[in-house]
Length: 453
Image 1 (tube, rainbow, N blue to C red):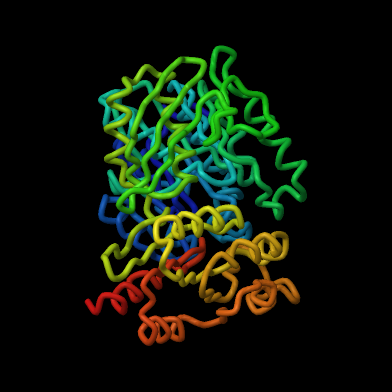
Image 2 (tube, helix red, strand yellow):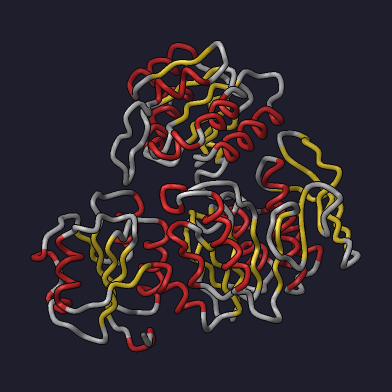
């Protein structure tokens, strides 16, 4: 498809983080943009405010008249997260439209750019956002499609008159195989999305295919220890080509030194605008990319100090001397572990109350042992019901079943109102909400209870 011929776009599942970025991209180009989503959200309301027309009813009558006849100037995009039996989708298919996956369209867009793609089962959103911020803050500028809302820009997309493009390369449904990057970063290949891949071997096969798609003169920057071809490795240990050393926590902030053995580069006493050793590692990857592109050391250092992170990625909701409340998107055992270790490193003398909403029955089943181990790092654990997303329940797989496996004394299963009552009664000094479902709807009420505002 020649994307330059498109004049109108319809997005099925427009409220998703990746779909909404595409909607904003085409709207920025001046195209007419329409969309459907099952429910309204803060993000869809933002899109509506930006002039994008959205409907929440799966009805053919809601489809714009200009899309009710086949046209080469019309583009229909869908996300695999939407049900296959939607009336809207069926109508477009029967009319003769080819429905493009979000990832296919992103691949078409990226063809005209020098593309930096960041992949990984976790870490990719923060790392890609860091790279985009370094390039933007340093004056290099870039366009970017991000998998979260970058706090510095309050958006999941950046526009710039530049040939550089930063994209989050999503392994879900093998989406990243539509990309042919000039620079690829792989942050992790821990097992995930096994409901899609079936097993770890098939997931790793996709990562191998992704890394093979890097241009012949490109760079493959891979976390040390991953079984993937690479040109450079990075880590927080000195056995990698690029690494962090002298990692310290001072006044609730992380500092570190960066070293690149192959380039003989050292950047000392870097202040990282966000917390966590895992984010230091993400920063090492971002610095390595920036150096490959020729960004000066001092500009990189300044940019990392001003980086505010990504919404729902270790986001401080309350950060006071007497009360701290952090919200995080973590929904994989390794992400949970990294998040909890970061909290405990920042507040070593305080008890941590962790409220977790498991995401997907299949993920809870497949990684139950890992979840139990990671969640045991909390001092008090509160579990919510499993968020089903696209899945039907699996017999025997419940939050109560998972809770039994977590070997800590203070643990409980509560619903929304019970959680708010618990917080009001106990007023924990350090509270953490984690999960990829709708647990974010609890953030504002918990903040209100903790701060009496």
